[in-house]
Length: 381
Image 1 (cartoon, rainbow, N blue to C red):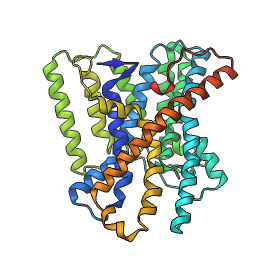
Image 2: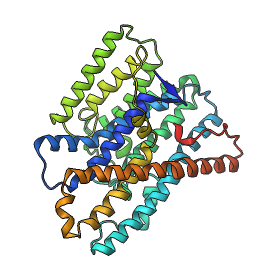
Image 3: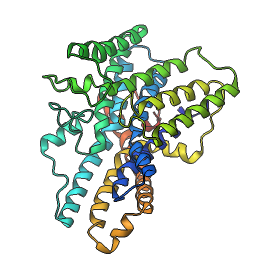
Image 4: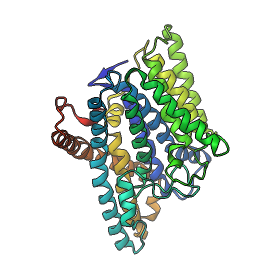
């Protein structure tokens, strides 16, 4: 496995592909009709969320492998996670609202008009609607891609708490998994692996805590533990054949339209197989990743958050020009929106994800009198 600046190249590549896939999915709605092939391709593009969750679980194991169980380590971990996500999310949420309101003024149609409560819920990672069957989104967030951050921040929080238990961290972690994803659902009547399943808890946030979608984070953690274990495939030819087989199976699964939808038993299934094989094989073979795809992985968080700000206002306004409508229905328009989103993401990565987040992290560390750990960019993990 090639590691540069603390990053695992092929995982960065997967991140990049996932972010571009989600961007394409949100841009694809501007094609009025699709062939069976393109329908399968575009609908499966949103599955980038599933691999994002697995990678998050893996990365948590990878980046905390030297955890000492101290409260200081716990504090630094949570502050860095929060500082990496929240400042950028704050800025882009308000910018998204402004852009959508401006486009609404131009086209005389309001698509986004959130209340103050909705904005506050979004910014503090609380789903907008938790009291009805709307899984796994539960009402989502104002900046609609932020619905996944509600899951991410919950996962980071209970993962961080487990770090406080030192050598017993995995005992606590998996005990919490068993309690929230097995015992509580069984108390509600039945255990489901379908993220759309509604347990109907009186305390709405339990719907997120018990969501089957969290199994994808757990799988990522397990794959991370396997990576640091003695499990290994020594025969390099077998490694390459398994990688090829897993990749071809994943392509067939998605293009063939098998079990569409989020979750470990749907789109998550081929990713579990592919990700597991890539991680285990990388212990014996070097999985080379094209520089461009690794770079996309580096800006993937920015791309994931900023592409709605590019696609939706622009698409709404452009559609009002009748002379453009035919050209807006061509695949080339999807490519243009995707590339334009990547360009804006590159800028956001430099000025928001890196500079703003690093500044915010340093201010938090100073305020809480915590000694910073060098000048490493917060966006590197």
